[in-house]
Image (cartoon, rainbow, N blue to C red):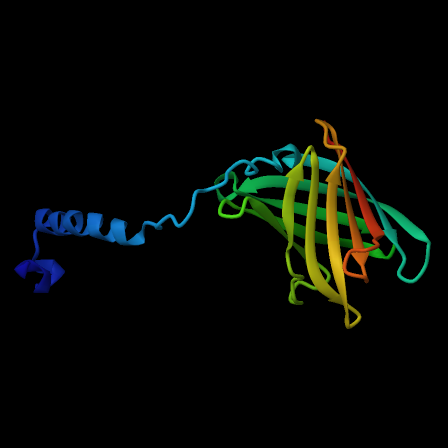
Length: 194
């Protein structure tokens, strides 16, 4: 095409549109992903129950003790990535001070699993923990990752249960023995805001 070497100012609008239309199918074909395996979309709507606004009752286990600290919070979850992900915005009213945090969840159709990342507003530039990964079975979501705590390897588990139209429960537990035993250290009881 000889006109492509010419200055755009000397091309007629019709020639410029024609050149773009000729180039578009080739470009679109290059950019289209090539499927490598069948997509598993069975769990893509697993977290739809969480969309909306919630009051949250938190319980956290004080490190190294059996003492629980209780406080309130709020949460708002919206879909992202066309529904294959969601973003949960949290306000936590801890006795030591209020802060914000966010959970980002993304569904992988290649594996049929969700990944969940937590971003703590008190350390917005700190490293983000490895995502917990997993899915739901019979109404219970189980998600796991390997991490470190105080320089020691741990296994992390999130569980979602009691899923109903107006309530849900999340809990976090750590295992220091590769999942043989677990210590729950944080629970969140969600009540939908009407």
